[in-house]
Length: 149
Image 1 (cartoon, rainbow, N blue to C red):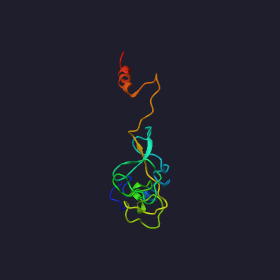
Image 2 (cartoon, helix red, strand yellow; image 1 turned 45 degrees about the vertical axis):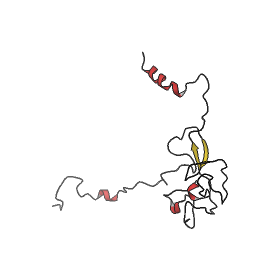
Image 3 (cartoon, rainbow, N blue to C red; image 1 turned 180 degrees about the horizontal axis):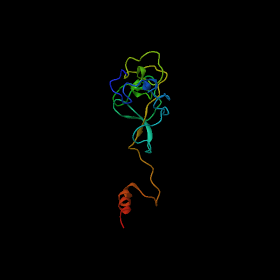
Image 4 (cartoon, rainbow, N blue to C red; image 1 turned 90 degrees about the horizontal axis):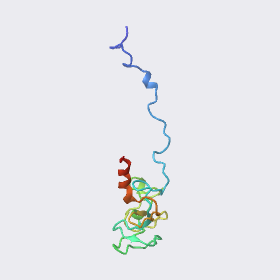
């Protein structure tokens, strides 16, 4: 006699223990290019500009020296929060390998890996469409034309 209470298959079978339930890891989930645009508006044509992380003032010269301050709010521009590699989810809050954590992310620091964070200016002038092509204002009329007989 069997020690099993129920005789149907699947109850207390040891066959499933041999199977590896984990999928083989193929590397990190996100394999995007570093510095490549992500999120909404990826295909939207816009120029990249540098803006202060604290007040949002657009800075014309993206070459930031160690002691440069924002002309509007006076905060330091050569800081972690204005850097491309700043990420609060990463180790030491930086996507680059650091040996020690930078104490204040808003104060000026002497990091050699600093690159100014460029943001897309969605309010910039977009290229005009050529004559003879449909414009965004004609989208509604083109949609209505699909269902007319």
